[in-house]
Length: 393
Image 1 (cartoon, rainbow, N blue to C red):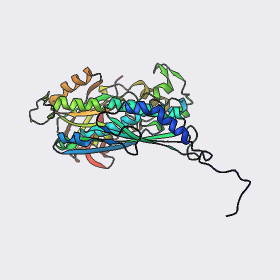
Image 2: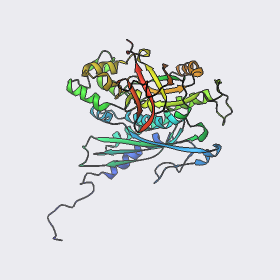
Image 3: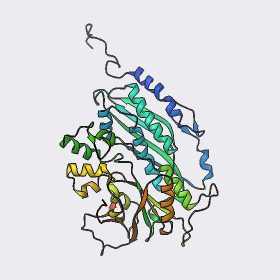
Image 4: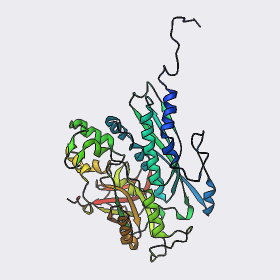
């Protein structure tokens, strides 16, 4: 190789990776991460691998592990534009753990991954503090993570986040399509806002209509940016406690709050309303031969959805398959448990209402050509959902 005596030496820092900044970020986030640790976390903070004491699973007869991974999509662009980074982590946790709880699994631990163009320690620490707060709300431990600096691939102020969580459920208590019956009640739980899906549509609307993020929007009572950055509601603790309340808990000896005529547990399924919208995600937890009829007149679109829909002149079918429109989680319960479910959720501070009913259907009578009808979704050849009526107010 030809010697280049006049060339400056090339270093890792010169290539754009600042190891010292990464170390400082770890120091700034350390206490927030440790605060999520219970006695089940082994080995503390900073190891090559996070460890969790699985002996807690010995109380199960047949423990099943459940896992999920996700990100927050282009909502990160809103956080970056506003230079507010301490809430996007809660979005990440909600997107991951609330997929696990759908089958009745309790989230046990989580890991995160942050890719960025430049490690700014305070910014990375803010992101992780948000993840830790989300883990606290979900009752799960943040046992590890990775921050990767990608100069030349991402801009100096750009980053993306992803996470994965693992949970456990007793095999005999798994929730899902197998439990759903004709006559079941469909119960809605309100979202906190847009959550973390559909931001490519949202961002296109505000760019095309030239709405700045610092614009005051009377319908929101705050700026556009503040409304768009509202953290995703985390439902996992509510869903788990509701299930134990309705079905009872063999491990603690708690009896079921509702005794059904069939003798079967009253909680049958949950659906996390994320990408694809309400109908597509609800269809995933229904078995073939059953259809949920959802009544739009039972709720009004929250202002963030109605304002964006009008601003962008977005067709209703497109809205409904992109945004949650005010419903973040759905419970499918035995009809005899509907009133107790609503009473319990609302008393807990979770705004909820009777959204619809499950009934039998067949291909000969199903309105398959209607834009209001969805059968199966995301690779699941399951049940169907029919949206009826017009949104209230």
